[in-house]
Each structure stands twice: as structure tokens, then as C-alpha cells.
Image (cartoon, helix red, strand yellow):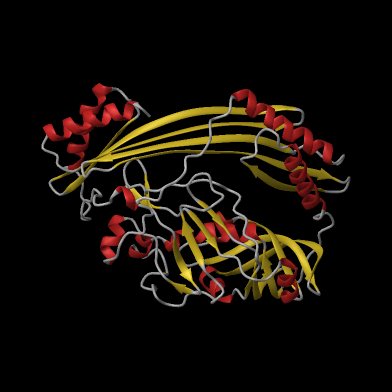
Length: 450
């Protein structure tokens, strides 16, 4: 945003005029476009662009906030004035912090990506191409089948009184194929996505369509399973869902509020020694890398858990000061506050192939669907009880499909019970925040069936 350079100078003058020595101006703009299909036509289309300026300042030892969507020069003096008044109303006792001290060389150099937002026509063409390829893949395709294409771009600028002047612009695009198959007796569905391969991508889409059809077809004729204890392999999608549900337990501010059982556990063994969890803003295949966090702190890669030992929680400046440690550069940003977020947060792959992982399981259950985490999981205690579906594991091989069973356990205990991990890590949701995992084996888990 070229106008940001004009606005930041006005904010600087307005702040200094009011005797405000410490201040910050943060600009965020997000653009998105998407199209969906149903049957043989585009059923939904959306396009949006929105930007916001966020101003923070320290007045009387308190932090004041103000925001605006108006990018007018005349608005900047009003923005500063509103933030100064807001500081007088703040009751929080946390010390106000505007970050300073980093040098240009402290920030990871990120090569600029070659990305531009596609046109509406391109998005619609991509969605219909997905639809045509999926419908051609199987004659059992039924109503409920949907395809779509989408793209998004984010621009961030941050300027403050300590000399920071940072910026980035990143984006990504993708397509999804969701097939519903009807064999005359029942319907089954499956879902896959393809990222950042617009244009000459028919072969890749055909491969994805084949996986979707294969996945849906494998679910036909699912039976039930008896209640008991089973060796369970969570596929990468389900382990990702579990990590996503309990991610907030790794945020230091939640631990400090008593909302995480990881409080005071740094340096202790909290997982099996095969578990290493990494958080990095520089994951190789992610086009949305970022060198600074929501407070302007240089970001970095770190192991949150290393061979079972909790090495660090995720910190912003305020939560780090409370614990007397350095921030990990994981501050998030909203209109009125600083929070915490992860970047690419994932369980590192192990040494076993997929076949070796199943052989190690012997007999058990391969969980490929879990639904209802919003109601069946407690992010504070770690307890979960989730309706699931998947396949029997028989003599180390995938067997018959099964459905309508419940997997119950505790996330913190599950981390300790994981006995093996396969060697494939797929991160299929690029963005400033994404979560991933290989398939994992957990012996003797409780399953409620028939």
C-alpha cells in the first residue's frame, strides 16, 4: 500500500504534536475471491477487499487503541486522538509495550512470491474445470457433489516510533473437489484439495478426482465395531484436527490464565520420545511465509516439543515478560488486542513407512473421519469423545470400512501414548497459520461401538 507511507508520516506528526513518544501504526489488507459449483453451474460467487489501520500508543503507562477503515489523510489525526483517549480508560495492569530493538539483519530474508489475484472469470473457469473432471471420473456422482476455486492475498505494514518499518504481501490459491457417490443403496462422500496449481493443472486435478472417488467408494458397506480397546492409527487429517483443537494449550497466555494444563511444564517430559513438534513461519512449501509477528518481533523456527520434552510455549511480548523469558515471535493481531498464534505447527515425521506403521499396529482401527470436536472436546482439560469412522486393521492391512463408533481419550495422555509415526508429512492448508501431522499409532485406546 503506497499510501501507507503518506499516512504513517501524518501519524508521526500527530503523535509528536500530542507528546506521544511511543506509538505504532499497523495496516492489514485482505482480498479474497471464490466460486462454487452445484450440478452443472456456478452456485455461489464472492469477492471482497478490506483494509484496516490500527494505531496503538502509550499514554501515562497505558496502551491505547484506535482503528479505522478510512484511509483518508484527515482521518489520521482523529485516529491518534481517539487512541490517546482510549488509553485513559484502560484498566489492564499489564505493562504497555511497543516493540523496539531489532535490526534489519534480525529478520529472515524471504524471497518475494510471484502471485497476483486471479480474475473472476479465471476463478469461475477453474471451479467449472474441477466440476467437469470430477463428474467425468465416475458415473455414480450424485447431488451434493461440489467443487470450488478460491484465492486470497494479504498485505501487512507495520511502522512504529522505535524505527520499525516492516511490510509483506503474500497470497495463495486453491481448488477443492467433494464427491458424493450413490450406489443405489447408500451415499458416501470424500473431499480433497489442490493448492497453488492454477492453469495447466488438468492432470493434477484428475489425480485428485481419482483419490476422491477412491476414498468415497471405500466407505460403502461400512459395518459396526464392538466396544473395547484397540490399537488406533489416526490418519494425518484426523491427527491434524486433534492438534488444531488443542493448539491453544501451547499458548503461554492461556497457561498464565489457568486455561492450559501445560502451565509450569516447560522442561518436563509431556509426550513420547518419538514426538517432536515444530512451529515455523518458514515452512518450505508454504507461500505465506512471514518474517515478523503482530508486534514487529522477528519470527523464528522453534521446537515446541523435542523428543517428548516441552521446550517452550508460544509467547508474545506481554506473556513472555510475565514468565521472564524472551518472546518466541508468535504475537497475533486484532483490532483491539495482541494475542498468540502458531505458524506452521506440525508433528515431525518418523522413520516408518506407512506399510510398516500398519504392520506395527497389527490389528486395530484406522480412523479416517472424526466429527464434532466443537462439542466433544474440552480444550482446557484435554478430554475428548468424538464420533468417528474408518477401517479395521487386520494383520497389518486395511480391512473393512466401519462407522458410528466413538473414540475417547485425553489429548495430553495421547501425546504420551503415541508409539510410532510414519514418515510422510503433508501440509495442505497454506496460510499464515497451518497445522499438520503424519499418521500416528496409539495403542490400546478406548472405543465405544455396539
